[in-house]
Image (cartoon, rainbow, N blue to C red; front, side, top):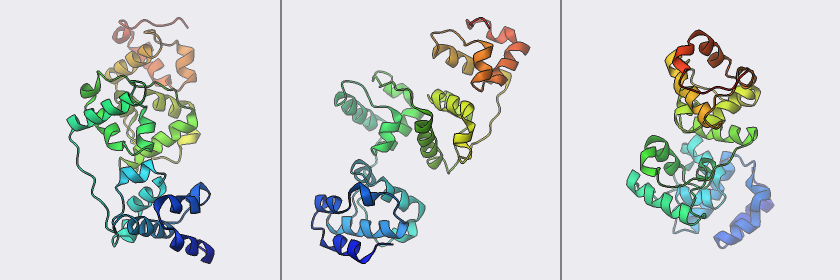
Length: 250
C-alpha cells in the first residue's frame, strides 16, 4: 500500500504532468490493484471526474492501471470512465493509414500496436487482413522474451488461453509458434489451446515455413531442431502432399 509520504504526494499533484513527475516509472511498476485505484481517482479528478479512455492510459504509461481494471473491475466500479468510441473495420483502416503515415509509410508491428493502445486495430487486422493488404508493415524479428510478452497479451485477449498453433500460423504469428517450439520453458506459464494438426493441416504450415525461408522448406535437421518434428514425420509418411514445395537437402 501507499505510505504516508506517497499519499501526500498524490494529494498535492495539481495536474497530469505533475502527477507523472511525482511518481514516474520508479513508482509506476509493481503497484497493487488497491494502489491503482488511488491513481485512477486522481486521474479522474484531473479530467472532469472521468477516467480517460483505455487508449489514453496505454499511450501515457498507465498500462498497469488498464490491466488492474480488467482483472479487478469491482475495485473501480465507482469511477466513471470516458467511453471509447466504437470503430468499424473501415474506420480502423483510416487509423492504420495515419499510423503508417507517421511512421515512414510503414504500420508498426503488432506488439507496438498492443503496447500503445491500438489493440483493437491489431485484432481487426487479424480478423480481416484483406482490408489492410495495401498498407506496408514494419518487419521485426522479436527476441524469445519479446515473444513471451506477445503470447501473454494474446492469451489475455482470449480468456487467458493462448490460441492454438494452427491459429497462430494462420494469423501471422509464425515467429511466436516457432519460439514456443524452440523455447517451451519460457512459455510454460501460459495455457495454450491444444489443437493437433492433421496431415492436411500441415501442408499450409509447410508452405508458410517455405515462404519465410526464401520459398524453400528448411531441411529435416532444421525441423527437428526447431520443434517441427511432427511435420518431419508427416513429410516422411505423405511426401506426395508436399511435392509442390521445394525443400532443402538434409
